[in-house]
Figure 1: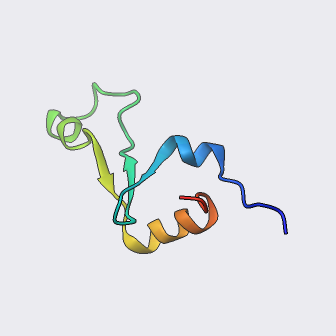
Figure 2 (figure 1 turned 180 degrees about the vertical axis):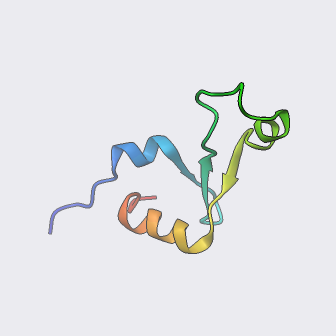
Length: 66
C-alpha cells in the first residue's frame, strides 16, 4: 500500500491540538474591513476550535498523519 500523504493546503490552514481538536483561523478578515463593525472585527481575531464532526473529517481526509 502507498503511504498516505498530508494535503499541503490543509497543513497550512489547520493545526491539531494535543487532545485531537482542530484549530483554524477565522474567515472574513482579508479585505472589506470598512463595512464591518468594530465588534465583528474584534470577534474574528485569533483562532477557534472546529466542531468535532467537522474536525474528524479534516483529520481523516486531509491530515492523516496528524
